[in-house]
Length: 492
Image 1 (spheres, rainbow, N blue to C red):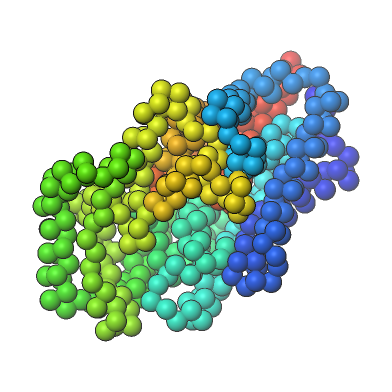
Image 2 (image 1 turned 45 degrees about the horizontal axis):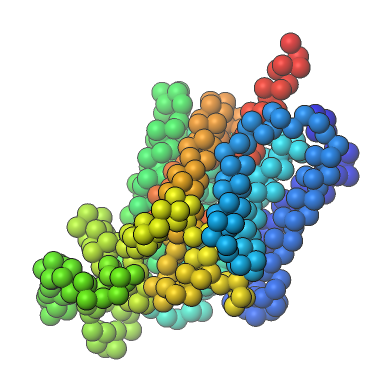
């Protein structure tokens, strides 16, 4: 297969990829936060995806060697087939089906693109530099937002991704720290440059209020250590990396405690402990009360909440110091035992349990789910899923694992996370080199681990930045291995 395009086409395609990722950082912010452009402009990435899909179809009509590519991407193709099958079996309406296809498959043209257009090492080096620049821009923006938004919450400190985007901003910054660290370990950066970049990427995490960031940092850098080859040869770089983490982590923890924690009085501490103990002691009694609820909402029970008198008396709300969130008992209480959040939505693990308890009533839905889009919200009323209309007040499908169970069932969920495993295996072999491919493969391994961890916390694949990044780098890893093998066979 001839993958060497003309210079004109090469420039257009590479520029399109850069523009696409740049749009993720500005479109939503300009539309939803600043109101400078209409909401419809935020659909531009999907339009670009359709253009890439058209380019791929043209290449497919010209080329005949598609069987090897199908062999490399068969799990992804099975996922596409399963998406269509679930829509047909559940007789999902056309507007909802189109919304479901958009939500789940819009990233795939970018995944297949590296198979039809060879992106060289120089492109990947420039692409990572481009991501680092976009990440470093978040530092001055978050500082300005922290000054301008004089509120006791960090939910609006989302950088150029916009308000309520603190979680995905933190995920992106953690991943950039990982790629930055692997670049340093593999000899691409000088120590002073690395330390300065590390600080610039880390500080915005301390300015927002995403508590899972601290767990992600620890897990991500544990993976950095585990996935680094020839540790003895890189011991100096590894020590510098973890020295930066040892200094930086307490720094951003101190920023969180300073910005978002009001020291409670003894009475407030006693009251909070009383509420938690009461909630835990009444758990068994609550299960008996659930029997009187409707069958679909049996497992939902509202946990008692603290009175907000402290919030009225203090400028900053009463919050727990970040160190306490490392207590396993508190973690279990927050993500599982406290079934209802303050917003009235289901908590993280209860969302997964609720999804499973609903689909298990029907064997077909247990295996294939209710159909893509059928448990999701939409900008258009007619495209809102049937089950989201019924259970939308519980915010169902708000994390990746629960949404996959709802819309794809056990088979689709297993297949989807099998793609994660397959990508991991393919990237594992490419991490060995010390060039930009080794940096990218090593960083991508950590990206997969982070996305698996956050699958219970975020709806990662519905967010453009994380979804496109996952699929594009996955396609690049698979395509690079495929092209390398084809080149070796040609030179025999």
